[in-house]
Image (tube, rainbow, N blue to C red; front, side, top):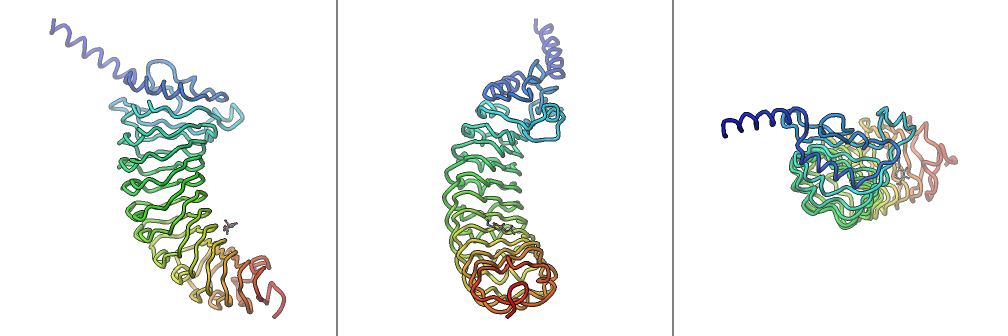
Length: 364
Ligand SMILES: *[C@@H]1O[C@H](CO)[C@@H](O)[C@H](O)[C@H]1NC(C)=O
């Protein structure tokens, strides 16, 4: 009996291995599908038959193991299916916890469907192969799983444009592979973890449009790969760490619409790497440090709506380039420097100060 059974079992394994995904993966995908409704494009109509590795829209498998590796569903894309339907995607329902049974998943993208609600399944943090988790542009609520830090391979965590609340879990800083963090436009509150600087691979930290409070963690300055920091439109307080201006590749800093106080660190204006700096609508005081030079190159420098006083530093006229300058709504006084960086600026860049004068305002 054994001698007959063994070859038969091998034959079955070979046949099923070539022509279908594991039934457990298929069952998990069907449960995921059952919790969602996509009325306009019909993408889930392709999710039929036994082989979930071929022809299932957005699903792909590891070629060797035949386990499901990617679920990639974008509601806004170039795919012809959208052109045919003549509209962007829309989906309702929620992300079923059965997705966690796909334990070899490396990419989970369910992005820009606008109508997906419900909470993030807590078990997502058990998907230990996950590299990309992108759920941007839905209406997902509830909290980020507390043990999200278990996802040691995660390089992209994008949960922007949802309705997530609660704090940024403290375990987030354990995501040692994370390069891109986007939690913008949610309802997150509490402080940014003090040891945020442990995310040593991080190059983009986008946390704007939440209700985050507390200071900018000093440890951020340890993120030597950080290129883009956006903490705008929160309730962040305290002063701007001097070290921010000494980071090797940091080029975009958006801290606008917060409750920052103290003075502008000179390093932030003197270093040549920062090309976009927005400190608008805070409570920043003192003079604008007179530290600009021939290396100064700002695409945008927005210091409007603060409590800056004194005069506009003369060194600003030696700048190589200032694309957009906004110093309006402060308490600046004195003559606007003359020089090429100022030639193309309009009066609105300087309006609503105490006593500025000179081109493009009234003559002194
Ligand atoms: C800076 O931030 C303010 C407030 O959020 C915004 O209105 C302004 O457009 C931003 N400036 C630039 C140059 O992007």
